[in-house]
Length: 607
Image (cartoon, rainbow, N blue to C red; front, top):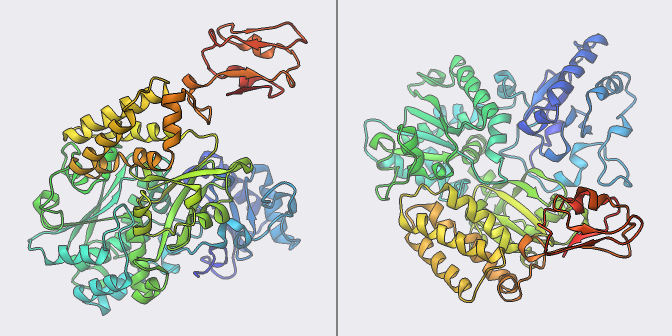
């Protein structure tokens, strides 16, 4: 296991660090104000020579923000209020121990957990990609260097040939972490062998999956690891210029990335004659407009060139003819962050982690109805159960977990009874899902699987570039059918037509967007076909999630006749006298849900 982040001291030894998460999520919850108040408390105590505040990237437990961790003690404080700042500083100065009332608890009734490493969320993690996230200030290159940054690049440039470097990556078993899982070393070898007077290295940071924030967090928390990986890859394939293609919706990541590029160039780690060698590599940033299809390699290339982001037929593949028709290698953020670690620690170090054809770790964004949402990095080969239940804590409110959507909108829904499935590239494909970029959306028994498939299909249909008919028209027709089913208008033959259209889209679409778009539909049909049949034949949604197939009812045993629901009903569908049972007229009710939300006694539910 790698060293827990709270025990890695990046500051000079005499200093105590108070690490405040300043990733996007914690900033939204006020972490910058917390950091300011901590700095003020330190200054007022005259302790600036003994402790400092480090503004880091994501610590992982995003739902607990703003997050503060002290180092080297590793005390974890979740949900820190600015008014708590003085208490944290005072406890560090007088040695009285952690502020008990601020500590993390799994539940309000359980004993507090002081150390970050002892929280169950962290127990199964193995941080390689996230090794410096939550540890260093991403805008301070000196901290990145003290944490070992660019040591892999130095080793590559001074001790390895380009061919030797490629063999090292191949021996590690590292596969692409952005989608299909192509072997990284093999892709580099193809680009290396391609003939061209100019070659390009591109980092794909166009993360657009619903519920995914892995690449964003790495760029916000440790941009230098990605730049180092890019430079190593460029040296391997013979590229002298590169681009990071990052969506403009990630302004914090873009800003920190640009600063990291400038700082690295100033230190001789990017630019001409890197580390006094003959190798030169220049990096620029290109901001995308948020088109999901630009995560596909050829569409991304078109966008960088200034054209509309639309896929191109392959072959030729980008490694032969890519950016401006030159040999181009494209790896995603997580892959490149792995590269620097592999070169620094050796191929055997990564190959010893994981299982079978899936070596190393994978970063996942746990979202949905999960109890502990956030960012996790676990060894490949763990089961879905181990990640969802042991790391994520299972579903919120102790409800039964129904399924998990893995691999983004092009992935698939795996039911709870298959949670013993190992998280590996081939096993996930066999189950109908895919590794993808690493999104995990957990759903419980209140989720309608037909409606969930409709949600993801709505996304991919909207994001289709429209270039090829199977995707443009096929996803549109599929969406029309599945929407009709959720509206209580399904008819015989709809399921068979969905399967036929899905088969055509998978086989005939030009790029991965169209080929993967049917997966949520196909996997829900595969594992939850009975829900489709209930919608069509019984006009019933067992999860009561489809408004057209459900009704609101008032429980006679709970209703107190307070009249609150009647007062707030926008269409006057509720009748009844004060202190008497109220009733909802289903012919008038528009199923807006206001009554259920407003009822102070939870007497109204959707059936």
